[in-house]
Image 1: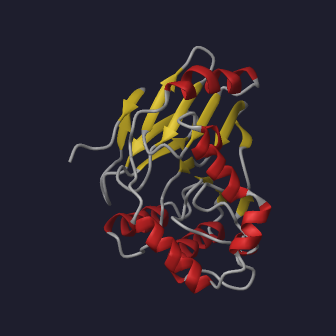
Image 2: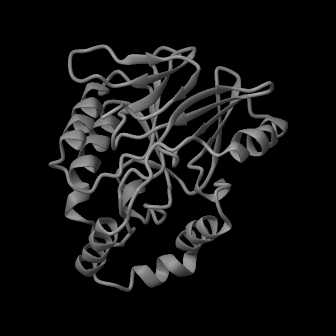
Amino acid sequence: MTRPTYFISDLHVADPTRPGTARLFEWLTERRGEAEALYLVGDAFDFWLGYRASMFAAAFPLLHRLVELVEHGTRVVWMTGNHDPDPGPVLPALGIDVRDGPHAIELDGTPVWLDHGDLVDPRGWHHRLMCRTVRSPVARWIARRFHPDFAWRMSRLYAAGKSHHYGEPLPAGLLDDWLPQRAAAGAEVVIIGHYHRAVHHVGPQARLFALGDWVEQRTFLRYDGAFTLLRDRGPGAPPEVLPPGDHGPPKR
């Protein structure tokens, strides 16, 4: 492989003027001509509905930079998450490869399983049911009946009243039960988002990388013949290498 492949999740882009989002745009620009592929492993937007003839204005800056990557020869793969479960027709029209659900790939012969992780979250059936509901074709159809301006306002009201528990430890069931199941199905490396905690877990049969997020942690995974979990340290600075282990959010 001549160029690296990147995996990133939980960007939760909603306000392009946020400092963290501005750095994200810089980071994406730095990948132009350098990245072989970029996998967005769910929740790239804090809210997205795939309308057929319109899109949210706040989405344009991120989509613009993704299109620039495509134009410079990077394969951009968009995986749906529980915040952006309805990709719609816009993303494929921009040259973005959309995957609605988990995705299996191979990197230099290594079987890799990609999954946002919301539908296997062992922390409660009610959360999994909610995520499954918003992903259903019926829910997507109903949501698109609302005017985009109204849908966007409602999403912002919901986000303002929701408390995120960013960076809680990974649920034990994810490592003890789900990861062995994926290994038994043939995966040697499993990559997930959703949990907002950067983890490199080395199991007896498979490795798991939880990507963390860009909301608070600015973590991502790079593959250039080997997998390396990294934390962005800003423009001009090399990223911090995160060794195997559990890496919680930075202390405030």
